[in-house]
Length: 401
Image 1 (cartoon, rainbow, N blue to C red):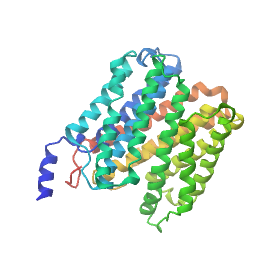
Image 2: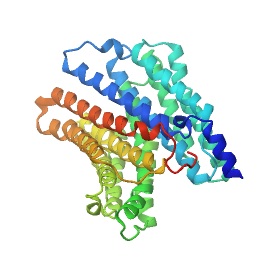
Image 3: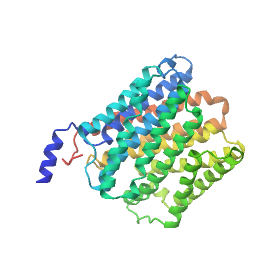
Image 4: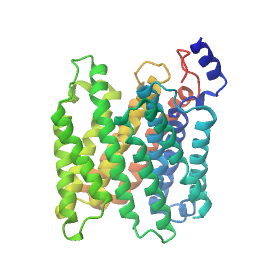
């Protein structure tokens, strides 16, 4: 009887608002395509698009890719995953639509307007609302090991506020500092979630022996991450802050590489949904290593190191995860077609162009900006087109969600 009632109730909700992954994965991906094409146009020098970038292109690119795009994907993923964790129905219907509407108003407004208080307020509301709906079922079920995700979303909200305040000349933080803190928060989320799901997905996707989690390796991998996040968020004395941060970044990279070597990466090379996840985690490790070296002696560019993490680690992890999650939560087989393989390859190339090409040929840096942005746009445009019918129609197995 309960299943019948749930089914009847579900039919009254338009498919796009039946679970959070649907509107956020689709709209955030489409938004990132527009954003990256504008970014490519800006750096090409042939188009005057700065008026579409909140009157501050560098701020806009950093804020919108970290908060607008990545934040939306994180919220969509967590508000969907909490249903699996707790057994309680995920947020849906008008409640989900309210969160999404606030996100959308902020994205459009920040794209076409100039800095103003109303847009700042709209942009600061959607994440706390999402954190509330995430925390409630976790608290009800007393799943305290998953509760930390809600404070992390709240922390991103604080950083979002600092982004906006910096634009108005308040807050005392520079754009580079705020961006770095936001990237580290997101990096910890990626390392924690990736460490949970990649071994499981690899085991199931390759039909090999289960990959066991060795407790001391897990602790050795995660503790430096949390210490690094603490060191980034809590100001350290300037005289040794670089050494502490560098040491924690190198330790994070080394420990997570040891963890990574147990995940049978070579067995995934024939499975696109898996190998992109592995490449993403490897790029996170390379990025942490590169940032550590940058803090020690500056021999690796800060921008290159950061884009190993943001484009390679976070970007590739996002595309691989949303491709898989969208199939699984709509009752489809976990297999992608040739177009999505092209998308995965394009994003991989975007990462290498923005990092390795810049390191080898510094004079090509502006070309690399444009090419990598276009390749990103190609990758997420393919996802948007291929997954539009998947995300906007009911599950193929008739179940709610």
